[in-house]
Length: 283
Image (cartoon, rainbow, N blue to C red; front, side, top):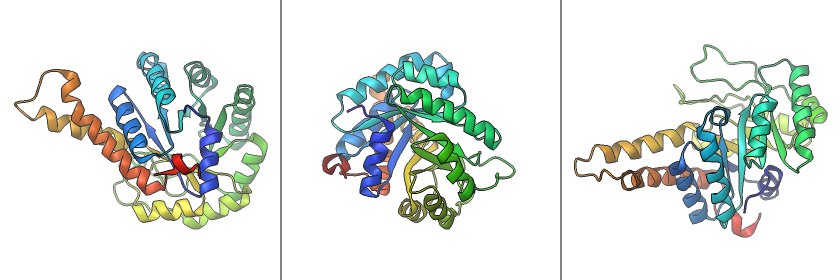
């Protein structure tokens, strides 16, 4: 059930829900997310940061994701998250990604369009959809947030690049929010309308209040990224085991709690985004 980005986003579009996209870092986080997806019968996206492709860990991690997705009984897309250049994109495709995010948001509009369009055209040759970003989604630690995504620019960006989904800046950021964010739901609706119904992506999904997530999905968000919460769930599960003086020294045994912790987190997000049960209904 390894599927393309456009296929899995199309499922969410048809059913008016959102695909949770989980960043993974090791075998245990893969296992936790897959277990949750299979238990809840949900389509999910498993994604990796480009630094993992630039380091040796990607050589080991990517085949594990592909194997897990191929064996799974629910639709899974393997996605590159925040690919900055063609180099990371090519390596991601070679190592099995079925979805690509080209993040050109650090460039000016014209450069972002040119780079994204080139990657879209390249990936079309092998049937892989591309996510773009307009409006740089920064970190919660940044002193200031960039200007929110303009609906008018978003419409032009989608028209010129042909992306299958678009990440937008609407009050979201990467990392743990110092205070609850306030998403601009009206802007999400305006971008959605201006782009002719293009599926939109919400980065920084860890820590956004549930009611805002639901409102964002109703407004047109079809993919939500979860990275920080995966890290925290894994760390808490590991810590709980390591603090037990009677724990086994066998790594595979004391990692079981960490896997379960990631699974529980993934189940929460699958339920929140409305993806639970959608692998069965294909809606």
